Image (cartoon, rainbow, N blue to C red; front, side):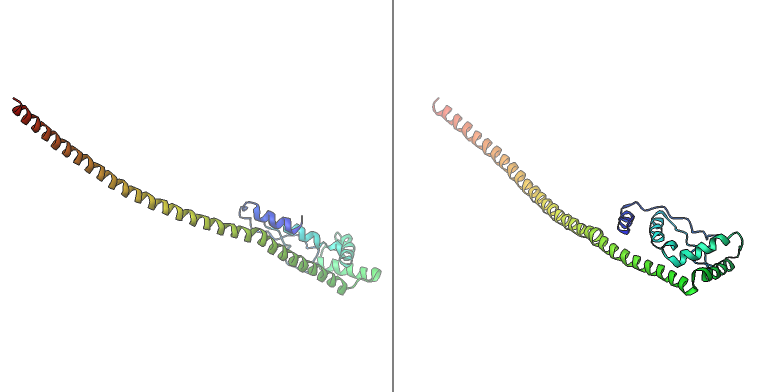
Length: 207
């Protein structure tokens, strides 16, 4: 799987559980005959994917000199158990039969390291691209959503102010209406009293 696919998969997959600590390999490291350090053990699923990609790109068989020393050393594994002695014997045989040298073997490892450096450069370029297309794009979306939220909050604040204004107007209108009812009732009683008084007067005058 290309690095770009692995990068996107790493971004969009759910976060994995914390991986268990790496265990040192008890077996020999075929690609580094003189290295006493334990072999690298990948930690998690994503790391496995990246590691598998890098391991495929830097397989020892891709370098003729390294493939040759391994081919000479493999038959000796059951005869010479000491790793250092086994590879020294393999180199001696390879030198006499195929002209292989120590410098050529070390240059083979340097070539693999150069491949790793090239892969790292490619990976960094692709992560930058993903950052632009995925991360930066989402940051822009976040900014747009924040701006929309602020706009909505302003609209809500304006509506709340309108509600307060309408509530105030409602109270004024209710007070004025109540005052009008009171004034009408007073006017009604006054006029009723006036008419009743006039009726009595006319009743007296007209006998």
